[in-house]
Image (cartoon, rainbow over all chains, first blue to last red; front, side, top):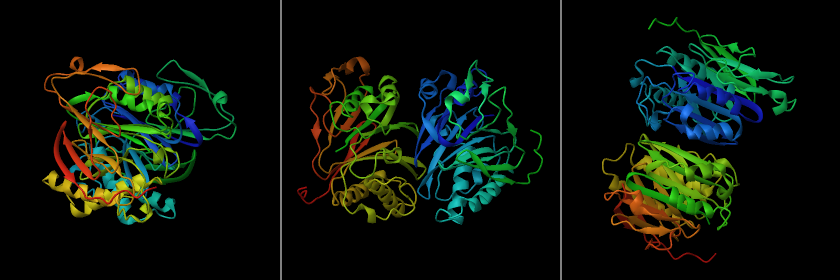
Length: 267
Length: 267
């Protein structure tokens, strides 16, 4: 299993606190030692830091923890490899351009029969089920919507349905963003929390670090964090249901969809 | 004017020495203070570090200088903005996937009339002439070669010709790589040097730093560096001619092409 971390915020916000918790799971408090990556959007641009090395030992991960890059949309992932070797081209998140936007994707789970997914003009570079699923998803989007749809909420319903198709092939927990919207799909486990005034305190589960959000925010800030497992011990995280697809925009949940999925087959 | 830096090598090689020289030109010894970026290929994967901040003051640039990422193909750029605002989405290098490879591009110069270039399915995200030229180039490649050509040297002749078309619109010095090949096109200024045994010493022009390559290499290493201006004071750099297009593979120049260009119009 890998772990996902996403953020959507109404003001540029640094994710150092949550990232610090997640990184400990990469080879220290967790088994996810096969690489990590994080994509920060800033305006229409984005930058990705990634490393096929365990995050708990990565010098680049340390930079990301210490250097507060402020962003309104973030997608991050730490990996425990199950499909595809441990190398840079198999390290999440993956990014491709569609409709003049950079789309970023990270996946937790594994798919069976993914080799036959037709990815159209989006060719995978690496060998993971995840990147192929992402390329297939983009191909569906590009085919149905040759141009960016005027109503992104219409496209969201399609994305939920396509994600559901992928979840029919195995385990498919996903984060997807174009820098404006952050979309999550839950196949087996995913949690989220929206922080807004009055802000409280929180302590990381994985590291002896506490934060007083009131010191770090203004009263109008709205910040949503999505993660495989709750990252803090003293906050109420929402557990997403199997087949639940959520769309976040600038910190707020703006749409929700429920896809009917068969029960997970025992593995 | 921006500055370009590229590397092609037959063994994974760190570019810290050359990068240290280049970064000084970003706001200290040179005027290129509108951002910088560097893409390292490792296998089929690549990672890009970029910052819209001046490189001489960038904490991420310092990490790249101190943390020896070893690569066989590198594309780097520092920017002095002339087309498009100073922001992350306008910061070189730009990367897109084609034929299941990541293609990375950086440009020095400026183009007139670039707005009308038809980029097909490769849509620019930012507003620079450079990214649009890159997307147009990829669209030409994708149209002529729906699949990766069996003979990359045939495609090289086409790329030289298309680069020549772009150079007809202004100043177009370029680096382009798919992680295996590194291609350069010279419109006004570009230099290159191939280092191989017996290795000597070199001193940076921009910083009081010297290196003894013999200490850093094995006798079989072959490393080519391409840069807008020579980076060292005690080596013989080759100056590329106007319209000269070079193809490097694992440190060796494997093809050269000369495109006929009209004299530069006075600006």
